[in-house]
Length: 231
Image 1: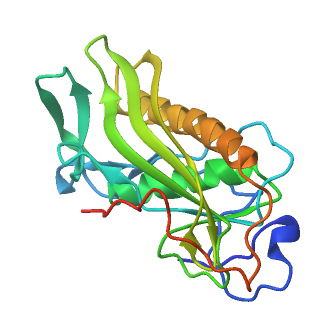
Image 2 (image 1 turned 135 degrees about the vertical axis):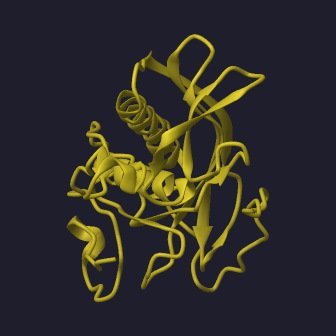
């Protein structure tokens, strides 16, 4: 994975960082393996979607690798969730782990909305401690019973200092619905749009956090909301 420098003031003085920044480019919605159709499944990836830039925000934001419901966390794409039954595609798969794709798409979306912040994903190479952590737990990520794309998530935004969360953050349930999807391509595009809407919510919450972190001489208390372990 290429290393890039954060866009704008957040990039000043850094030499090693794999960061998604305000100038993040849009990803392709689908990648198909070369060769005949029988050589393997069609591979799909989530895309960063444009959003309205918001003033303010911390210098660095870390998006933790999201927690994914076990029924969704698989190579083959879950195309529908009726509430009692998951429908799995026989021919279409994610091009990378779903948690990794959601994490990087969400980070790219946040970078579009917070152009003054450097946004990166947990476990990406980083040279500085974040001022904010973003945690997401995904429970629905497909078309729902009515045939429209749906995203259900638990979103947590937590201020950080000295490499650890501190103080009160925000925790909220976010349920989003998009358009009807008659194909896997349409569903992946719709889910990418819903992740952009989730990033809108996260960006608003980030901007409401206290602007100043404790100084280096101030002891950092234990986080009020522990970071959930990822399976």
